[in-house]
Image (cartoon, rainbow, N blue to C red; front, side):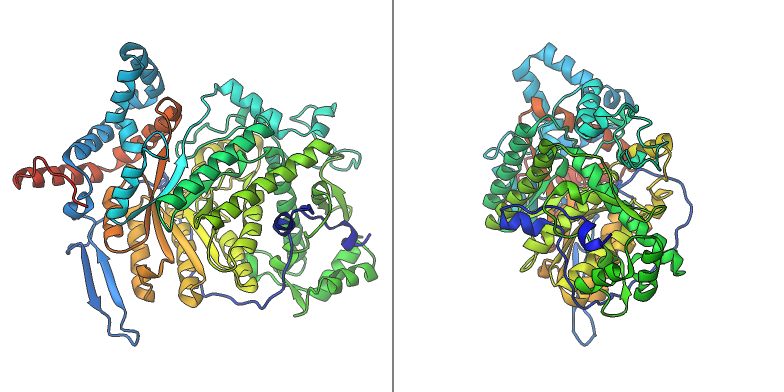
Length: 640
C-alpha cells in the first residue's frame, strides 16, 4: 500500500485560504538555535502563576546605564517597589477598592460561596442596587465595562500610562454540572461511536486487533465524569458546543472584539478559543491522530537507537527508515522509495520530526485525515469506521471560522492569540494554529500560539514549532503561560489511566517556563523574527526576562517581547513596565454584570490562592495610600 495514497490531510475546499490552512508542507534549510538545558528537581507543589514575593531592585524606577560593549547597549532595570509610579494611574478610591476586594478574597467562606452570596444579594437589594454594589467592588476591579463604548475610558487611561489591552467579551453560560456533562458528551462522541453496541467506557479497549471497529484510546475519548470541563479550572473560560449556529454567534463575538481592539489602539491583541468555533469531537480525533503519528516516529527512532533525545535531535537514517517501513509491511520497497522521493524528503540522508509531520498533507476529505499507523500490523487504519456528511461539514466549518477570524485580524491590524486548552484537545489546536501562522505570519507576527509550561513536553513543542518557522521563513509568535488546567488534568489522567502530562511540581514548572522563554529570547536575539508574550503574574519571571533582555541587548522599543497580566491584578508589575517603555498588556474582560458573574467567580477563586500566599500587593497598596495621606494627596486624581 503506497503512502502517497493513504497518508491523510486536513481539507481541500473551494476557499483558497482554507486550502492553505490545510496541512501543507515545505522544505527549507534547517538551523538550530543554542539552548541551555535545565535539570528537573523535586520540590513542594505550589499554586501555578502566583504573585511571588521577590526582593525588588533597590533603585529608582528606571535606571539606565551604559554598557561598555561594542554595541554600547543600554541596560534597563525596574523597581517594582516604587508605589508612586506603580499606582499613579489610580485614584484613592480605586486603591481602597483593590484593598477591599483582595482582603475579601482571603476569606474561604466568602470565596467558596461567592455565587450563592451574589444570588442572595441580588434578591435582597434588587437588580439595580446589586449592579451598583458589584461595580463598586468585584466587577469594578476585574471587568472594564458592559460594552465596547463603556470600556473606552479605561482603555485610553491605561494607554496613557503605557499599558495596552487584550479585549475579551467574558459572557459565559451559567450551566449546571449535569447540563455541562450532557453537552460535552453529545458534542464529543461521533455517530459511529453512538451506533456502537459497545459501551462508551469500553469502546475499543478490548478490541485492538479487530479491524472492523474503530481505533480510539481512552485519553482522546469523552468521559462523563470529566464532561464538565470547568471543574478545577479558575483562570480560563470554558465553551460547550450546542450547535453550529451558536458557533457562528461566538465567531461574531470574537470578530467584534477584534474590531474593538483595532479601534482602541494601533497594536492591540485579541484572544480566541478553538472550542468556541466548532464541535470538539474533531479536536479530540485530530489530536489522537497527531499523537499516534508522533508515537510511531518515536518507535522508529528507538529502532535506530535514538530514543530519549530531544525532539529535533532525533534524525532517522533514511535507508534504515525505508527498511523498517518495508519490514512493517507499510508498502513494498518501490512504494516507499517513491514516497520519499516524490515528496522531496530525505535529501540530507535523514528524516526529522518536522519532515515526518509534513507527511500529513493535502487530501480532499477531512475524514481521510483521521488515519493512524497500526504498529502491530504495519497498516494505516481509520480511526473511526465512518463519518457522516454532517460531521464532515462541521469539521470544515470550524476551519472556515478560524480563517475568517485571522483575515479580520490582519485587516484590523490586530494580533490574534489562540488560547491553550486541555491536553486531549491541544495537539489539534496547536497544529491548526501553526497552519494559520504559516499563512498569516509571513510579513509580521499576527497569529500567536499559547504554550503551557506546566506540561512535560512544553520545551519540545516550542522548539519544534520554532524550527519550522526558521525553515519556512515566517514570524514565530508565542504566548507563554504556566497553565490553567493542572488539577483537572492530573485527576483525569489518574482516573482514566494514562501518564500525567504535568510537571511534578511548581519548581519544575518554573524551570520549564524559564527554559522555553530563554530559548525564544535567544531566537529573537539571533534573527529578530520570533516574538513572545510573557503572560505571567510571577515577579521573578518578569525579572528573569528583563535580565536576559539586558544580557542580549534586546531593547523594549523593538516590540519583540511583550508582557501580560489580568486586569485588576499585579498592577505593580504592569504599570512600571509600561512606563519604562516595555510593551505590556492587560487582559481586559467586559460584558453585562449579570452575564460575567461566572468570570468574577473564578477571579475570586484565583485571588484567594495568591493573596493567601503573598501579602506583597496589599502591602504595596497600603504603602502608596499612606504616602499620599502624608503628602496631603487625599483627593489625588491621575493626570493624563
